[in-house]
Length: 142
Image (cartoon, one colour):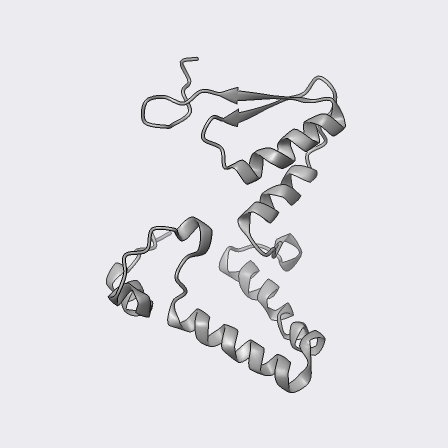
């Protein structure tokens, strides 16, 4: 397989705001490239023309396209509104029970810790925070 190479200059050209600002909050809400903005506007226009539920039926093609992109089947694709929700749903699929221990990085995202704490309380599992080293990475020495 050939490694995928990111064309950074093309990505910047495709994202108009990059001409004016340096944006570092990509984990929270990245700047959309023009193709994303155009697609969202087109979908909103479709909703205005045929209705929201009818327009959502068009999204079903997403599952096939995403599956083809990563060589999976469409029933293996989960489409959620954000990474935090995806993490929460994945966590709910783990059959935790009393005596289980969930290891959490000291620098774990707060919105991920909350459902872990809730799952531990509900199941009797425990959560252990793993310390970070000086660079903020999980320390394997502790």
